[in-house]
Image (tube, rainbow, N blue to C red; front, side, top):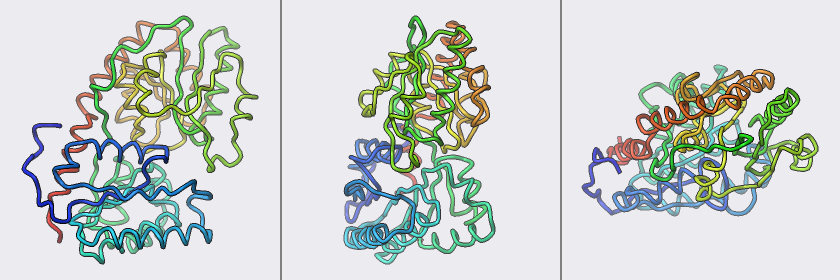
Length: 370
């Protein structure tokens, strides 16, 4: 943990209640919460976790009877567990509408307990959803119980600030522990591309398969390693369908737990995430920390991490032709991969270190309630 953090313990009366889906849920929020609960902040602020993951969630973000019952039950859990909490830190995707309604109710339950409420937004779809006056007004009303809104990307921060007022919204970048990842990337013949993430259309996996097939057709030999699993929001995108559209050079290795990812990054030469939208994906930061060049879409805050032409290559989303060209450039030039990978690792160390993330969060936890 950075020396800039004040390690003087705060009062252990009440402490901090962190709310959000943890294991066995997958994705960025469980990863963030796991890092938080293993950090120095856990003891410094008497952090406890209220895990809202209770079995598989069907139809997430939709107005169904099951989701209404689940939301009411979760609000009651917050009401009960935040009885003596000084801070309640709620982690969510925030949008679309049903999720926003849910977050508003959870925040209200914590506020009624007189806790300081921090609502942490982890989804890059916020900037694409908060585009009308009606939606911005609704967000302002529903999030009124929260004292502070934390955005994980600068574009999300800007969208939320327009809706809620700049004084209530702060940016805290995602970060990674550089010591967990060995630098240097891989050197394989043929070179290997890694995709890691949910197997959904919006993650660009179909675009990547098309780009990869195009490269093979042009004689650019490579292997494509796909690490991830489908989720319900994939709208019919199944692993069987993906296998049918993939050539023999594509390997589907399934979900990889976070602790196995450092080794996974060392087994490849290039990381690719061609998403249609993102906030600040941890997978990109981890790949850079592992010394890999990154080919990614120019969406969300990815351009703040991946410096185009320096630490990787950026392309517009949903353009498999341009993605193929970017990947081909990296696959053909091992020296370029090495230079970009080293520059990426330095960039993470300077700008996206996990210690800096938790230093900012420590400051929020120490602020008094209004």
